[in-house]
Image (cartoon, rainbow, N blue to C red; front, side, top):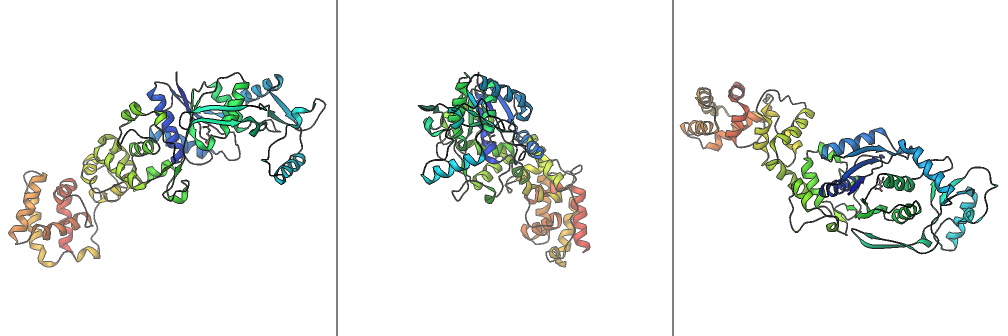
Length: 459
Ligand code: GLU
């Protein structure tokens, strides 16, 4: 049974790279009918914050990446880590190291001067320390010879020489476990079968494998996913704009668009660009993850977003859209259904935020500004009057009838349709861009249309 985990450190928001890792872990578990686990790696007490934990949980929820187990918090497992550390000490798989800061500093300087890679020399491993007192750290007895080899599911065969790895500290002098150690214990206890994570962790992997083996555990399979680059080829960061998942929500993206985009960013299935979640689950495989880093492309994300705004499940989109309307403090309790507004607007907007900003007039009064006045010369009043009266009398408030009425009103005053339609649009929406005028009028509703026409005529 496949068991994957997403193991973020809550030291910031859930960023795009983390979300992609979470998605791959989730997809692989769903594909294999396995189990997806969320584990919050919060042992760095200084850098972890509750806000960041919340941002991760909110981000996962918004993306709809549901977990079967968790969230687990590493800070709640300290007893377990201690137990394993003691067991390793007893079994001689780890040792107490009493080396002073000064000694380690000196060692480091010497190694640097000799152009060697700085690493612990194993002093306390090879000397009897049983009479020692004072503060100590616990180090793992890394094998001194041979290699660590593993078949990375993305990169292929990876080999590290043990001589390159020194004896890792697994417990600090205050007894707290270190990062690489907690990962190992949890992956082991949680029976993780596939570790899918960013390739910035590749150097940790041989160390973790050695510790797992020392514990008598079978290491999981590993898949190290290449990083995401900005458009300038540098590692994606805040400089490139939004990187937090929730910020993408604020900017008006749909979760399915972001998921589709993230899935394709670093993974492919032929030339296909658009994938439903079910298709992703069906086609996703770790072997098809690209080896090369992928560059983030905002234009493509916008394109996908618009695609999903046009074609996605209207109910779900309406829910997201309502969130944006609420943020703009637009009261949607009266007026057209969100669903109809989305249908009318999706053609000309790329994000829900933009859509919301451009949909205020469906729900709120339009104030006649000085700028608008120029569009209503006095000689337009007769045509506007005709239009208003005919609209007020319409037997049926339908797109077709509205369209017909507009045509007739324009014609009867010797105007081209556009000469009447554009001022009407401005009167009704306060701007020059909106969905087709008949649909715009249909959605605004008869009473409000008549009211707004009266208002500009008064001015
Ligand atoms: N906590 C690590 C991070 O946020 C991930 C560790 C792992 O996946 O093994 O980078």
